[in-house]
Image (cartoon, rainbow, N blue to C red):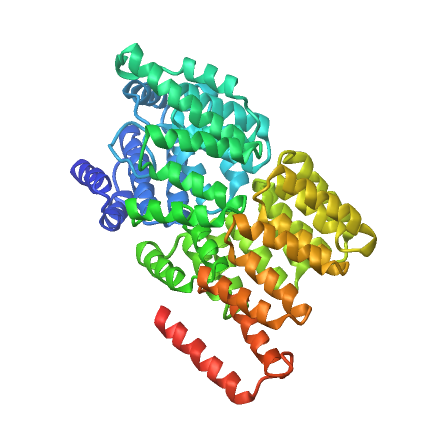
Length: 561
């Protein structure tokens, strides 16, 4: 069956997994002598069959094939297996589950493949046990990266850091390791020492090495800034790198992601669109882009984005989140099913937890939202998870927990105006805390004068205390510098509350000129028009109107499909 084994290796190298697994059934069922050579061949065939099954994403069957191969290997004399190890290490080759050249049985490689299958099945404890069975000196780059991920999942950050550092010593461009170590608090100086220990592949000239180290160091600094919540510092470095690497899709997406986190929504949307122009099939962070389009109520672009993502890869968690964002306006429960599906696909997808938490808040289930936002924080705490937790605790009337969470955010992000506002939001809930809230909002504005969120919150506080004139003056001062639809809407609401209906009408119309898709402006304008006609805006609508709305919803569904 040697010829068949060679053919199977060729099929695997070509990615023809269906035919490879069929051929594998013949190889593993082939009878023969029970001598050392035939047992070794059987073990090799089982490994090849496992590779084919892995390629077909039949992880459980692949796992069984690899384990059978390990059982077979125990019947091979130790001298033969040790010779095999020497043979593989001499080649320097580290086959993945899809790599397939027939070679002597290597126990460590098969353990690694077993771990990868367990990981694909979300059986992280079993995967970790397999990887820990591989001696540290025998681990290649891929094994160290895998082990680092597994240690991090098990919250053993010290062991994870050792594995990630070893990855960077072998190759400094393992960006997953850079991001993980930055989040674990490794300093830029420590990163530089790791870069210096990496081999100079191909004997490149010193000038080339120094140039690579310069931009690599700046990239690492950006990662460290963002991991420590210094978003402005990280953005500045990324913008500098864009000068060196124009049209770099990865950097564009990193910039857009950070802008989305800190609330620079328009800038983030622009950079996501730039990335899609360069690479229309990009999927990374497209769920973040979908959420921004939903917030902007730009359902035309959101519809197009969801359609494109379904065409590119419907199974990605980003696609599920984009679908959740699309459905949130019309059917929050359906949107929730898509958010849950994203986490079944990837249970470490942070945006999935954020989306699910926000949907649970909309469905008046703040108790479940707390669990969701905590899940996001366990993976990586950022501003949005803190904001979600505060909102959930306030909805549960757990003001002490909300205040503790907001203060924790302020401690972690000590230079963040958003964190200051978060503390102010908690104090603003009670009339006795409004003076404290005002101080926090004003501090946020001093720290970041262009932070409209704090200005809007301060305006709400003025209105709550009957200082409508101060609210109007504050909002008009901001409008002179920033033509923003949210400022016009807030002004319209203040004017409508004080019966200055024509002024309110003017600002609602201005908001819609800036953003024709703004749902809040549309609803506010509709409500205002009823007031101007002397109709109670809170009176229930006729059944005929409700039926018409339902028909429109069905038309939207058909359009998406």
